Amino acid sequence: MNTVVDTALIQALDREHFLHPFTDFKDLATRGARVITKAENIYVWDSEGHKILDAMSGLWCVNVGYGREELASAAYRQMMLLSYYNSFFQTTNVPAVQLAAKLAALAPEVGGRSFRHVFYSSSGSESNDSNVRMVRRYWDLLGQPQRKVIISRNNAYHGSTMAGASLGGMSGMHAQGDLPIPNITHIEQPYFYELGQPGESSAEFGLRAARWLEEKIIETGPDKVAAFIAEPVQGAGGVIIAPDSYWPEIQRIVDKYGILLISDEVICAFGRLGYWFAYEKFGYRPDLVTFAKGVTSGYIPLGGVMVGDRVATVLIEQGGEFNHGYTYSGHPVACAVALANLELMEKENLPGRVRDDIGPYLARRFTELGEHPLVGLAETCGFMAGLVLVRNKATQEAFKPELGVGMLCRSHCFRLGLIMRAVGDRMIIAPPLVMTHDQIDEMIALIRRCLDATLADLQAAGHLD
Ligand SMILES: *Cc1c(COP(=O)(O)O)cnc(C)c1O
Picture 1 (cartoon, helix red, strand yellow):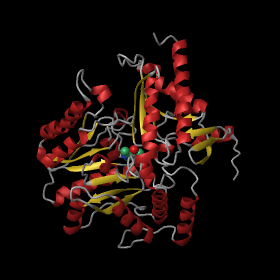
Picture 2 (tube, protein in one colour):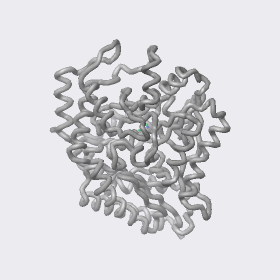
Picture 3 (spheres, rainbow, N blue to C red):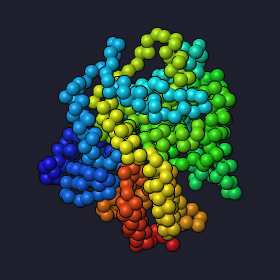
Picture 4 (cartoon, rainbow, N blue to C red):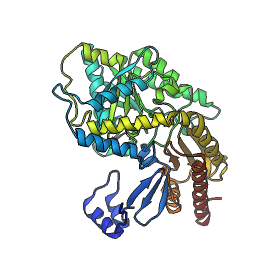
């Protein structure tokens, strides 16, 4: 395959015509975008021939690694057989049906509740829009139309459509576009490192953080609250891992007030935390589960909602048209690729590998980075990990935000051949689930070099004592 690219030409056309997502257009125009031209396994290459270890799986999605023939040929075969047909007007297609049945079989039953139905979209954002529509329809059908409020968390990420961005707790996103839309409200995130009080254990903090939900329900009026939505581990927020005590208390609270629980597993499902679905790891019982990203390992867009029996039964038995859906709901090619992806994950036992093998190995190697003079905390959950860059380890003193220490570290990563993401001064990874132990070692060595280079810069500039 021809991968020789005229970098300057592509960058010029990019600047002329392509408005990138989440990008300062003016700033990018002065630099020129990095052109990625090919990828294999856990590595990507840019147009200058640099090989880069992609510790972010693209955007948290390439779970089976790049360049898998099984997925490409599934797409090819399905395109030749039935490239598209819609699932409106009482029609269906074989891959969409097979995938729905497969997902239902993979989703574990919890507390007597099972997931037997799937509603399809093409992305995580759309899926969360569907959640809002479905949750409101559910309460309408139950004769409680006043239950409209959905509670979410600060620093959550639930996508970038109007509803997705509203459910999310990103202040920068809310500031552009008069968000959140009405009837969406937020509580504080369960981030112990930042919000824990002196002398408080992480278990105590987890309970306190969960009770912010109860306080918000009472403040809002329990009869007005429709649902609580949360990521099992907050991804884009910086890999924020709640203490173990958090989820059982959340479950107690949503049960007590009868509100729906939405688990946004767009990142956390499909092996990322060592299970097909993340609620299984934490043992809570969601009514709706958002998925996207890893369902196709990012090879083609697909998203959806696993609809638990509690909601599905009401939507189905009460009858009446649900006035919502997408042209690409149940797209046959996307569903065929998802099926091939899940089969590959099963064959290679990727969730089990993360749970029993590479997850624990990553935990051991990654937490060693906690000894680095710049690192205040290094933690993992399954195959996600984050570390905090601090000015003073002992006091947890942070760097001034305007120094942009996370971005400095990230630029060293790119230079040294590693993709790591910076969220403020939290450096995060979510590598492909096919990584070997040797590749984990290679990645940890690269991270260490990036931390050393960042440290050297900060010392040279006099930002450390
Ligand atoms: C990425 C993400 C989304 C949005 O998915 P898109 O496919 O980008 O619309 C929603 N929720 C979570 C938790 C995500 O990580």
